[in-house]
Every structure is written in C-alpha cells, then in structure tokens.
Image 1 (cartoon, rainbow, N blue to C red):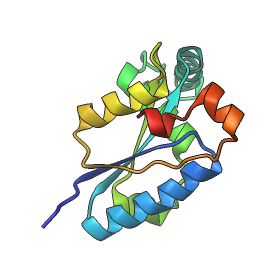
Image 2: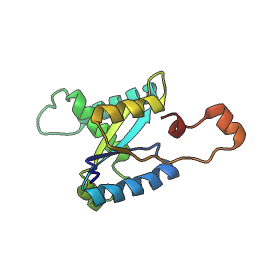
Image 3: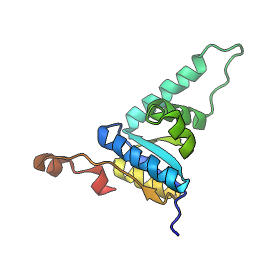
Amino acid sequence: MFALKRILVPTNLGEPSRAAIRYGVAFARQFGARLILLHVLPAKDFDAAIETERVMETLLPDEQPAPEPDPRDVVRNAAYEELGRLLTPQEERDTQAEYLLRPAGSAGSGDAIVACARELTVELVVMGKHRLGFVEHLMAGSVTEKG
C-alpha cells in the first residue's frame, strides 16, 4: 500500500493555489498525512517579511522586556501570518498543518520548491497551475512546469 506522510502544497496565494490546497487537504485527511503549505518569496520580500515579524515580536507589549526572538521562530511566525488564513481551524488540526516561507534565490521559485520538497522528504507535491496565453507562456513559462 502506498503511504503518504508529508504533502507539500506550494502557494502563491492565487486561486489555482487555493484549489491545490483543497486537494492537498483531501489527500492529507485520507492518508493521515501532514500538510505543509509553502510560500516562496523574492529574497527582498522574504527579508522584509522576516524583519516585520521580528519588529512585531520585539515591540509587542509585554510585562517583561522581550528577549531577541529566535530566528527560526520569527520565520515560523511570519509564515503563519502569510498562510494561516488559507485553512480552517478544523483543516489545520486534521492535517497537522505546517506553514513555511522560503526565499526564491537567484534560480527562482521552482528550484526553491524542489529544494524544500527534497529537504522535507515529501511524498507528494500538489500545485495549482495558471492558464497562460501563448505569448505569456513563451515569455514567463510556468513554475509548475519548471519544478
């Protein structure tokens, strides 16, 4: 029997990605697998998202002075801020959802997605695909096809 333990759904927060998330949730529920939502950002946007989260964690009113936040916690919290609204609380519980943000790097989003899938040893990647016109496809291609 084929077993799925980890399912990766890269998302750019667009409608095709939302459809892929619905499929990812269904597969995760059926196989009792963990669902991992990944959002890949251009490096400058990634850095800005992380810095914003770091500032928020440091400045939030607290009874004691806040220590410098752990970088892993900052990235995890920033990912949750970006992606946490994509699943219902029940879906989150059912799928043991995990949220990840990664920088795109010079090779682009496709390579970041593949690297993440390998690193996490996922068994299934579920991706949405935009319908591009002929000229758009020639100029931009598709991350789905490149990954």
